Length: 331
Ligand code: TYM
Image (tube, rainbow, N blue to C red; front, top):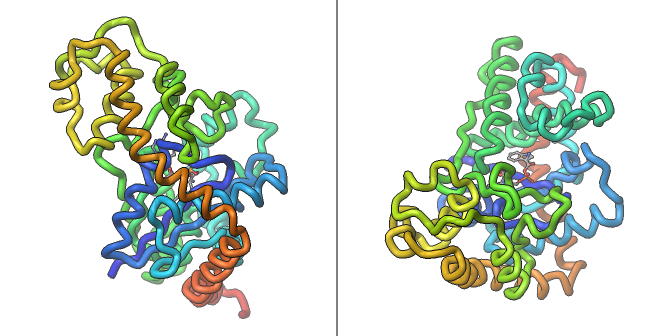
């Protein structure tokens, strides 16, 4: 059985992009794989996080993931900082990975923007930690959204270089599992930017904790263009906002974008947005409701994470100890 690893940063409330790009896939992969799902708090602090809010978001995300269908009993759900193997292997990978490789990471360029000299060094070496997350478990399949592809290529480069430099066949190759549709859900305010937890505008995203009326309002206000919906998929080519809404509709309804346009093409956005609202509410409302219920018992959430970390540590501990031995540490 192949081992799955994936992670999400507890730096905000998970949104529809996280759900369609990753979480939905995580839930279905549970049937046939051994899975580890991680709240990556070490990654989160690469940009400033208020400590109390970080703790709160970590619990909130745990609740959202369980509400969305992650099973913390049959699989492992934990927070990254509770398993020291991640940080230990990340340090080794900091020494394997090359500056030139990191300089090519588009996510760093996006996040650092013009402030490149002022961001944390953690943000820069972030992809090395991500490689450590996965390889500490010898996981081979990683379900992520489209934006993480480049990081996973880097993780493969690190694994190969480690194996080559130390003349071992220790770390396996990893495969990105990116969904065929809606792997990059865009902001509701700007079709050229991805939907993101860190966007200052709440109107830009549907949170998985949003109530029905908030969802309706955000979709009603979602940016579109004045033309009616096209009759065929090529008509979406230069219309990123329209494409985004059609793709969201299609995946949630289990249809292709062409089928959605066969029904809604030629009509205005008003009625389409109403139909879309019903579909999004049907997907999100049960998750939001169950999340609220789970948040009433934070002691239980903390217990889930603690138990998950114990089980994660039992897998990663020996693998990372072996990596340390290979490197030449007296352990
Ligand atoms: P994060 O927290 O940004 O996002 C979690 C997951 O959601 C996906 N995603 C999206 N998918 C589609 N459309 C969007 N707008 C969108 N926004 C986010 C992401 O691709 C991701 O799968 N570096 C990672 C977390 C991480 C990780 C790992 C993932 C740390 N270690 C090891 C896999 C394996 C991140 O920041 O995800």
